[in-house]
Length: 232
Image (cartoon, rainbow, N blue to C red):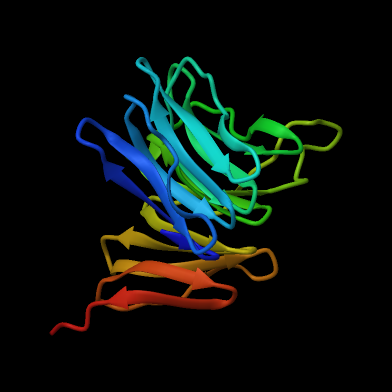
């Protein structure tokens, strides 16, 4: 992975996987050098984030040149699969019954975004916009799309108020976000995978409607691309 000239990867040192980085200014740097297991390293700007095994659970760690290594979580359940955009970090964390979505930034610290009885996962971050998938046990365990933007709270309450963008009987996946635009594909048995997008101005828009397989969408600004099977 690379962001603004900072290259990040996991490398095996013979016993476990460690986090490494390279940049033109700093050269090759080994970010972790211990007996712990490390996974899911991601980078944005000068910030690297990963999940690290502490002997009992997975915890979220971060690193910058300015601050060095910092442990963000000390939870009793696993904290895994981080995403990062600038200095904003999000991840899924086990609360004893299911995974919930949390976020952190260096100014305001940690905040729990979801409080529900479903598994929330596949979190993505872009600026102040966070998006994720939540499993709906009432409809055959398919995933629906949720989002929250910094500052969206319930009236008169400090509790975050996420928006549920889909509520149907089909499975959403392949979620990505850029700014305030989300994209994903949906598994509709009647028409195969189709691609959808959402923005606060336009709401949910279906981009494809055909009998082929459209999946793995990516987005940058308002430009969206995806893979489509044409029958060949």
